[in-house]
Amino acid sequence: MNVLVAYDESAPAQQAVKYAFETYPDSEIILLRVIEAADGYTDAGINLARDALTERKEQASEELLEEVKALAGSEDVDFRTEVAVGKPAREVVAYAEEHAVDHVIVGNHGREGVSRVLLGSVAERIVRRAPVPVTVVR
Image (cartoon, rainbow, N blue to C red; front, side, top):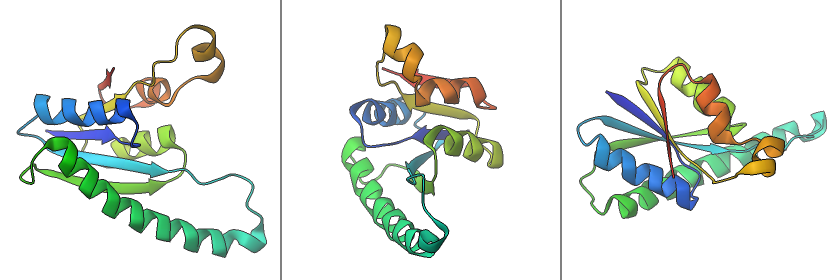
């Protein structure tokens, strides 16, 4: 079984990682970190932005590896990391659609009531659009 965990360094995402390692110890755990690209780049700045995002992607990949080892509490955990650039919900769903993912795990940022309705959330968008079952960890 391949389990995709959306990881953004937040406390709920850290809980999602811990949940994945505890619940699916014999599965391949794939941690996906999405770097958000700012909207509004002009054509003149696209190459500069692309270079900057490539550097951020490489740095994020290295940092993610160390963070997850610390969360798992062991150097011997079996996982791999992926980094994407774009909108988080869209990139998580696209990754699940394009790869052999059987389950997605995301952290919940705990929005409730009016703010949840007005702002929406990445977790909710993933739940609605993912092609596989999704677990939201609190």
